[in-house]
Length: 368
View 1: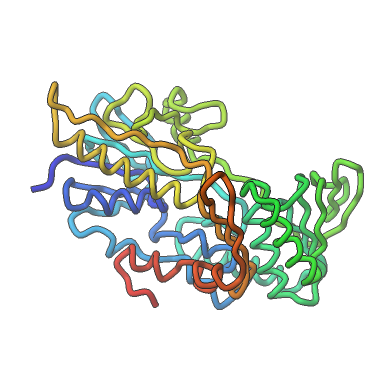
View 2 (view 1 turned 60 degrees about the vertical axis):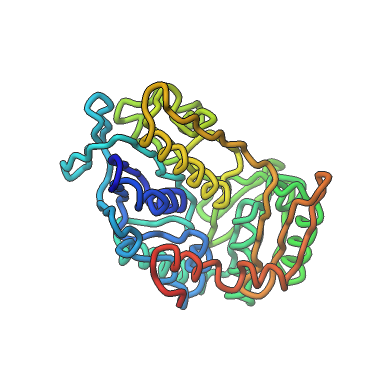
């Protein structure tokens, strides 16, 4: 017997994981504006290589055995009646609500439109632009900027490619200077120009960019891998701006509940539980929230079970591919140190398949 109605808004990594975890114990409805799951980890390669154009898209139809997926956009939450109102007019009653709308990423790591066809067309447009550009500028030296620069270089060995980063070393968020040096060495050995201490902004003339020192660079194509924005504008428009902090993230307590609400949770990139906005953190939050939701639904009053608390992880393994056959993996080890592993480990762990077979299995499909 299924206990309680759970509505999960957002079908990204955290939302999918949570919905699947609760499918056998509650009546789950997963709401997403897209008709398919978007495997964002594969999106940078999809924006560069035509043979990967369709790889990031996995249908939702095999995810839930008991619950269902509602394609639509949540536009309002009636907390008094415990209902989510969709743009279609449909009303979804809930005993527990989960906000898992994630974050918006810069191109090409973005699902453009609402259908697979629209998103594929966006990837194809990027591929065509990359195939003909003479000079391509990538702004941002974090994992996404490094990975995208490598993918573009392998696809366009004849083009001029510049990676501009505002920091003093690449991959600085890993806390490993060695990982940054390894990334820089790979890029420069493959002819990518790496600019450090280069905070870029658009120049006065179309197709020009300038750094903080006034240096001008011309490029006929640019990508900005400079961070993400939480998908919470809809909450502000729906009258729940008090749920958000100054950066637009949902404020949650240690149990991943929206502060002041026992039955409303927020998981993944959308919340303020950790500054580390990576997939492993989102999955860990989904698992903990699933446990707490089950505890909430199955206990009442003075017998209510105490929730588990989320402890943010500040150091976690990070894998940065340099194309399908190389990369760098940073592993935290005892004593606050990090181990930096190279191409073989990175290729096996992520670079060759970008974890696409794993995610296909998570959604009930074969790995192929």
